[in-house]
Length: 216
Image 1 (cartoon, rainbow, N blue to C red):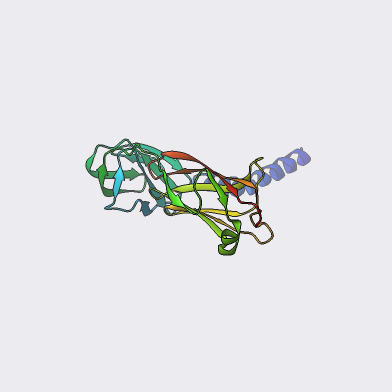
Image 2: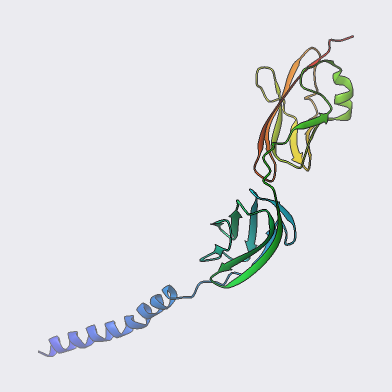
């Protein structure tokens, strides 16, 4: 009987010792989420946007329960994107989330339905007898577009092999920069390829073929 009583006392003491540990785990599970505060919007407050454009808002933490007075909301990490269509004219866009509200004003223009086009550059599609020496000396090939764009661009041979020039799309132009040792050769067919888009999501497949002239 004495041994049984002693075992019961030890068991009770062990359960009492575990109680604070179990309680701590419960407190961690019940911890409140970190509040999210609005940081910025792109395009910024007061800008013009196309009726089929998008607005991206950045927060300092992931926002919860995000809604908007117009458009469709998508949340990814610390950003929330509102996609149109929006009604042309003044737009007062109210964003509401678990921790607050933010109102942004825009002027909505008619939907942009025209894809960007090439308006000029170092070479044109179909050019032949292109002298590679001035291009190699300048160290770059530039393509100019009808509006600001983003995307990618590469320089390839006719067979589709990447020549190795560095492509960059910025503002309304794309630039291919020469990498030393990968200069343009004579009597060679080159193709500039890529895919670019404008702010409204209209895309354009770049394809510019040119042929360098033979050696003098």
